[in-house]
Amino acid sequence: MGIGYVPQGRGLFAGMTVKENLALGRLARKTDGSNGVVWSEEKIFEYFPRLKERMDIAADYLSGGEQQMVAVARALSGNVKLLLLDEPFEGLAPNVVLELFKVFDQLRRHASIVIVEHNLDLVLALADRVFALERGAVFHQGPATALLTDLNYRKQILWL
Image (cartoon, rainbow, N blue to C red; front, side):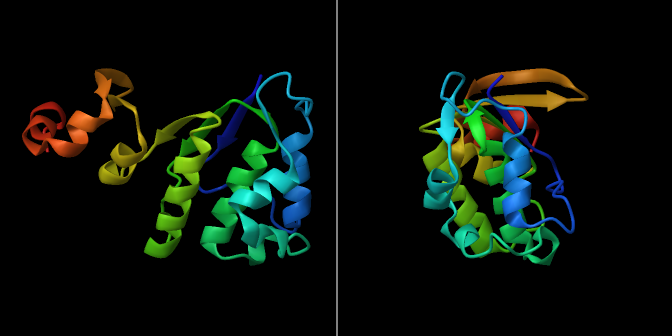
């Protein structure tokens, strides 16, 4: 249905190469553009050029940041119009977080992205809209800009 999902903890298949992990992302999806953007390997390499040189390496031998790139690339493989990211910055080095942030900022021009993330400042800088949850229920929704720029408003809404 054009939905790509990146689980918390990446969910890559150990012992399988980057190429094999990416191929798994295309198994149940059309690749004809009928249901989202076509994310070919060439297009994915535009966002994650490092993966091109690591295609034949087992995913579990990659760094945490590279593994996250493979997980996102696998989720994009095929036709994708909505990308779901669960804690995409968790456990990553600051320079990798910055690199992924830039990629997500570019990707959101081509697909909708839903991010579940505890790093509030990062996600607010990326987001257009925010849905804040408590115990599974939405208690606030609105534009992200106000929460990013107005600390008093953030304290009032998020009790921080």
